[in-house]
Length: 147
Picture 1: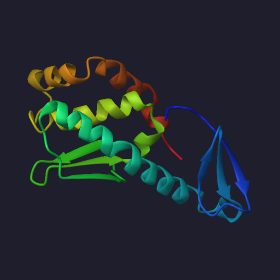
Picture 2: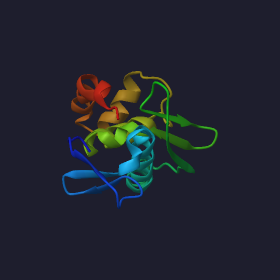
Picture 3: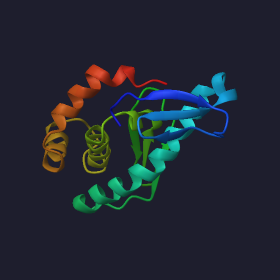
Picture 4: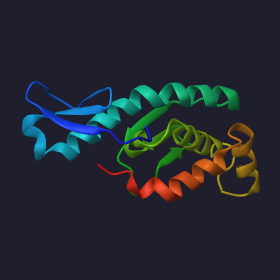
């Protein structure tokens, strides 16, 4: 959520755990650590993102059928109008909550405006007025969201 934490290996841990300022990983996971972190962030995303999507969707008068947290190649998020589905890259769980909220609003606005035109950005501004700060954050720190 936008901060750096310590990593400690622990023989008693079976999966990635987060407590206080530390991530704890199984001792034998040194080789598979990337996959364990990806799964950790996906699980966290499934807890954190859907309530926020529902909140903003209600504000915007939208209904969303499905929310997914997965590996997206070169995008932070995407949406599908056919299924009323929004997808989020698991990496966004390393960003501050304000950036995640911006990405949610951004994707939901695509249900009203397909292209990134003036109407689209006006819609984003209407529901997330400080979106430009989040866009700037992604430009500066987005490439560092790696495990």
